[in-house]
Length: 415
Image (cartoon, rainbow, N blue to C red; front, side, top):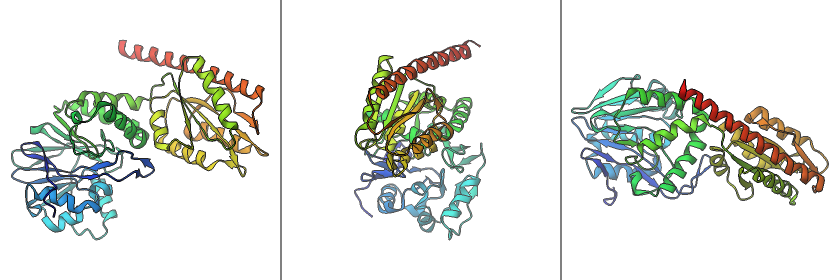
């Protein structure tokens, strides 16, 4: 073990014993431009309790941080809030080292752990929603949060220290030796939070809303939210909770994300005209050419947008591969309350652009405005005028939609 890896204190008896991944830049297709952490926590009590482990390649760092406080063999209980391998990867090793009295997971977590580790010869204790584990002077409450973001997910609340161990929710991919939110610049903190929600949590927005209602109604006192990725919340707890109530609603805003791929500049010309039309209606336009825009950054911009306009060139009778990649990614994220349309240029077959419209409407769920605008090779003045006018049309429709949302919100408040 390396003596320079130390546990970092949260409170007198609670420590961060995670690992920092400075190098990772791709997390299942998500561009982790600032790296990430795999957070684990040690509770020092009559029964020493470890909450989650870390990704397997970080074994030495993880065990060294624990060893700076206690002998890893002295761990009595292990809690697995989430069975994904970046949080459970070293569970078999911890079981071998500590032979803990209890390994604790949800019912679904037990199934997942045994599916991951086929030779895991250990009796894992299943906890139910609302069950409490006593470790001595501390009591840890368990709350199931299924599909946030896996079926096994649960969160743990240490009442006496007012710490919520939230697994992946409220987290972000951000590598830092500063483990608290108030040690990170606000811009970075909330940009990475939004990016994480948009790329990981967004498809489960309905479950987020249910979990937030559950948390609010439980009246938990929170001094810390200790996530499985990124810094621990202690200053901005109210703000991140408010954002997790806002983001799942996906209420439209006066913002359009204009995504396109171009081969010889034709689709780009069309995009420029559409952007000008949108801007004439005072719509905030974010133009994202696919040759320089990563799919996860596009998803982040979509999180608070009201419109997606998607353009593509055609290659060998099909939507260009880079366009298909982003369409498939957005389909998995299932953004809601979005209007828009498709456009593009083609050579001798326009069927791919018909398929684009079908994908936008039927797969991703975009409410189509106007028509699919197609240009045979280079767009002429008539096509570009049509692009501009349809940008105007979407801008007007988006303002109407936003006004309707404000009226509905006002009715809810006063009802």
